[in-house]
Length: 366
Image (cartoon, rainbow, N blue to C red; front, side, top):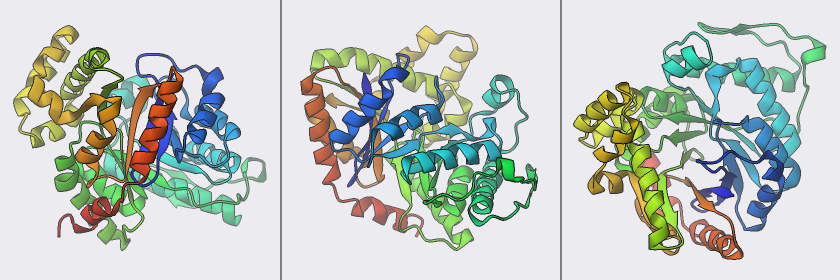
C-alpha cells in the first residue's frame, strides 16, 4: 500500500495511491484511519483510475479529524451542477473537512476521452468555479440559481433535487495549473493553486505566483490564507539499492511529461526547449521506451527529489520550503518501520514554519 502524503509544511496531510498498482477500494477505510493515527492533517486523491469522490467518502466515514481533498477532480468532464453536488455531499459526510481540487485536463482528453467540446481552459474554468459557488449559495440560501455565462446557463431548481443547507457551506476550491492564465484564475476565484509536478520551485516563484497575485488584485482579494499545494516528483526508498527502480520510474515520468505540449512552458523556463521538442517527436512515433534516455542526471535532479527515507524529508524542505505551503508524495507502507517513517516525516514537516513560503506569495511580482 502506498500513502500519498500531503505534507503541508506546518500541517501534514496524506492520500492513498500506488501509481503502478490499482487502488484496493476495500482497504481505503483502514488506511485513512492509519493516516490519521500517524499524525497527518489530511488525505488527498486524484482522479485517475477511480472516482475520487468514492474514495474520499470511504475515508470520511473512517476518520474524524482528517482533512480530505481531491487533487484533482476533472472539472470539465462534469457539469457544474454534478460537481457541486458531489462536493456538497462530501462536505456533509465529512462534517466540513473537504477541499475541492479541480483540474482542466488537456484538450485531447476532453474531446477524445470524455467526448466533449473543448474551450479555452482559463476562461472556462473561471466560469465553472463561479457556477459551482453560485449553486452552493443557492442551496444554502434557498434561492433559485441564476447562472448566465458563455459556457453555462443554469436557472432551474426544484425541491426534489435541492440538497438543502449544510453545516459547513464554505468549501475551499484549489485549481491545478501549469500555464500563467490558469494561475491568474486561481488568484481571482480560488483558495489555492496546485502546480503540476513539472513545475520547479523557480518556475512557481517566477512565473506562477506573480500571476496568482495579478488575479487576486484584479478581484480585490487578499492571499493571506491562499495555499500552494504541490505533489513533486519524488524517488525514495529505505535503501540506496531500493532507490534504483524508483529513479528509473521517475526518469520515465519526466520524459513523458516533456513530450506533452501542455507542459512545454515549464520545461522551456528551465532552458530545455530542445528536450521538449525531441520528446514530443518520440511520443508521436510511439517510441515510449526511448523517452527515458533523454533524461540525464542533471535533468533528473532538477525535477525529482531523490533520497532514502532517512533523507527525503529534509530534501523536500530544502527544495520547496520557501515556495509551497503543502507537499505530497508516496511511500510504500508494508511494515511497522514504514509506519514509523511516515510518523517521523509528519513530525519533521509539520514543525516547519511556512512563513517563508507565505512571504514568497506576498512578494512575488513586487
